[in-house]
Image (cartoon, rainbow, N blue to C red; front, side, top):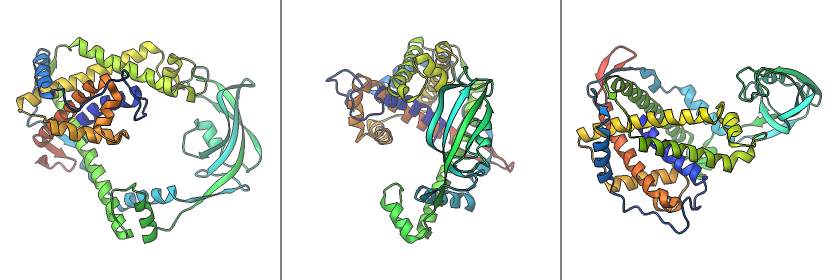
Length: 401
């Protein structure tokens, strides 16, 4: 999966996940407005974009670019294959709660805890029957370390310190106390990795294989990991090529109306996310507190600054890839747009591309154009990767393929 693919998909997914609140079938636009896979001419829009973007971009060299990429990312070991299978076995394991014993690093436990600052309970610091793996690092360091060596069923006080950089400024740099009680150590019995187990998990439809034996499923896992490694390698290679193109390309400005639209989309998306998910977080009572506690922004101004920079970075890549596409006579057909749209719809739990567009109402035309750009960007990425001079970690250079 190319970096450009990811960038375009990110903007599209934001429009779907946040604007539609991730609920397929809800109408994200005005009532009664329906989308359609026809009616938007991407080729026409592409020509308009080219005429606009060439005013701002002086394109540098993009063919024969020399890059160095670590080929070790392509290596898949037997340990990785085994770990992948063991992870599946763990998800199907049977848990037993043991109410005696002493905890140690690596144990999965169930506990109650109550945090206080100067003797007063603080927001978000109290919970019961929480499942936690000691050493996972999900809790702050002092609390995580303090949970090892505790006897099940006894109460303990664990003094803790919140790091100065902690996202909640009310707790950052503060010393607190956590009263904890481990109620049980959870042990897991893993199912045996045999043909019956393979048939059971394949029957769930969660894996893209018809494997019926351990040998067949192990080969499927190995190929899956190799495919993932290849995607990571291609992504790293694209990033290296993009950095070189970026160095030799001059961008004198941006179409400000498009920058404004992108910033508004980001802002609207996160506000929609806040309105939908904000109540799930304790201690969050405003959009600014949501930005602060969930995303780590100091305030709304800092978020807007980030949105502006993100929009400019995204549009810079879009302008450059669009101009390269024009130089290379890249075309995008309606069939390609619809095929890619079906993929995005499936990833976002819609029955079809059309049903996804229908749910978005007036935003559907914007999404169709974004899908068109995603197809273009992926084609241009292939051109860049197929025409770079690749230096691998063993110092052997080769024409990339």
